[in-house]
Length: 113
Ligand code: 5GP
Ligand code: ZN
Image (cartoon, rainbow, N blue to C red; front, top):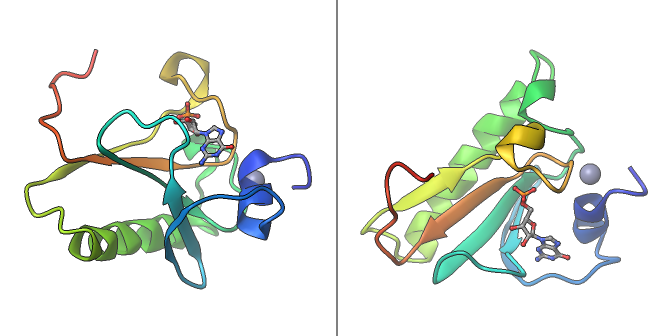
């Protein structure tokens, strides 16, 4: 998708600070962090939102969570972390390329509000 911000980040036409990369997944630091550690973890392939997950692309979500476990070890997040997916208007999604916020290094309130 040529007009998608996160596709441009994957392509490198918009710069980002990398945290992790493999064949299927890219993770980079959020430009407006909501925790001392805040990465955005995405499948490289464009999927608009969690509502677009199907039997063809769902393996990519598994790859995202494999990557999160690797990032946890890489970044020493042994105290824990939160993974957040915002979906659609009421979910607060602003970028329409599915992404998972990986938030850590502070005590995260629950419920999130
Ligand atoms: P959403 O609100 O859709 O769940 O999350 C989008 C996230 O992308 C936000 O946390 C926002 O700070 C981040 N973001 C938006 N534009 C950019 C950008 O150009 N670079 C980076 N690194 N993060 C961005
Ligand atoms: Zn995209």
